[in-house]
Length: 258
Image 1 (tube, rainbow, N blue to C red):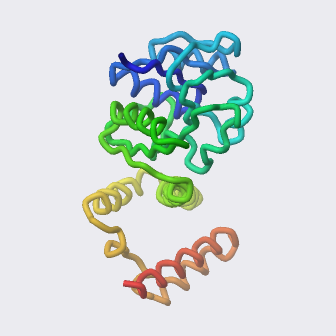
Image 2: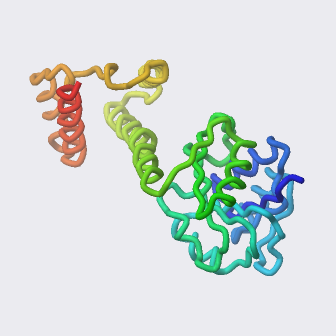
Image 3: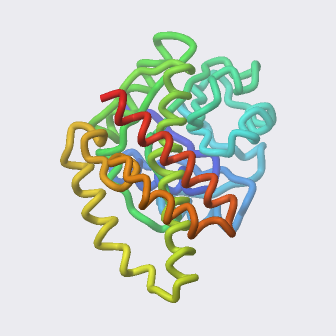
């Protein structure tokens, strides 16, 4: 008999999980969330009912808490899960962030960025699972393997390192795109001009076993005249100059570690 799964939350991770569960032929029995507008949209994605009253929480074997880190303790305190497995999806919180009253605690962490309305091939999303006991880990792992081809066991320290690495390659990189767009806009240039460069840089990185030998630019060459010209251009924007100098030093240091 298939496990009954309920998803708690209405954000981007909850939406992606609901879509993945439905596509894996194990749709959730319920989406539970405080926000009825978003909750109904996510429930429609899952093809299941929506609820926001604690006393009407559906009975399930596994509850996936796809809520913000700040809400994990409060939500898990408020709801009665009986003897079911409860696993949050956070990259930085341990299972002990769940309420002590939760009898079977775990983590179900998808290493991916999710955006509302955007489809992701969940079979390619690495899933990291943890639990307080082996039986719970096996149940979470069984569910994970229905959704993804890459399921790995982790621990809190390993998962935090994964999360930090993900912040560098996703969140920080995107912020650098935002910075590049701003510089282009101030020069009266179209952001689209940079996209072929971004595509080629990304394609090379995805095809290589390591990004380290792919590093190009004036910093890796230690082209001091060019670096100084760039620094002069950024003198009136000290926060950008600080980022530029920090990354330049980091690239030069990485080169010397080869």
